[in-house]
Length: 298
Image 1 (cartoon, rainbow, N blue to C red):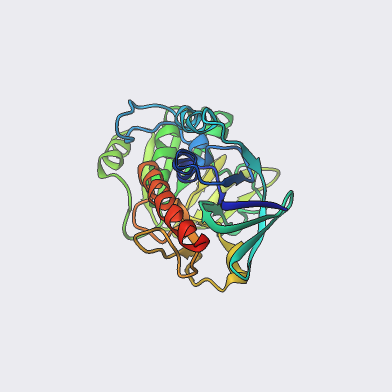
Image 2 (cartoon, helix red, strand yellow):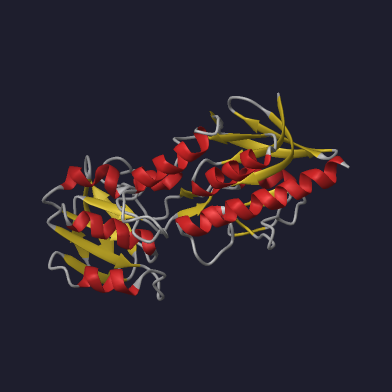
């Protein structure tokens, strides 16, 4: 078992920012992730709203964030967390690779995709994808659908519109939580059709051939369902932490209702999920954690 003052779970923008600040503060910590460092930035075609940075790919921005941390000597370890328990005043984090004992834990695990449409799980990897930049090129010249009501859905639709024959952008919520400017830009494209409603079923044979909406069947070769994202926080269940639809409520210090458990980035119950707010969360949490560690060691 590895003993550290702080364990950071998740090496996305939020976790990397927390690691950067904790390293500079001289706090003992470990940073782990169950996948590649950079988080969902790795799957975003373009980031055009990060202050001080000209429009760039998510991959390039992720690389820059990772390099800013590793250049200080921070190691990013692997670990898929299964549970966190509290023994006395320490947290025991169990992963599939190594276990950790820490005074505090910073949770920056972001979102995970949960199938919500009939046929979604069946055709995953066979026309169902959650990453346009990863799989969009497979459907060049074909018709596809993007489902969602947040910024990511518009970003994916924008990217796909430059590759495919036609994009059906299906807004599945009465209120769209995304940039009006980007939405208007998409609507003006000849190969983008905006629909409002829900996808009831995904149909196909060996791969996706069509989708059923509230009032029609659309013939498509792929669908990108982007509304089934839930917070990746189930491993906190042993702590009895109350969440809102899986999202963690925190105070102004990024601390949850369980002292010593901090939450940053998309896993939080928050209104705006952007790279810049994730980085801000990480910076604030690092200062709060440092103070918490000092109090606990007295």
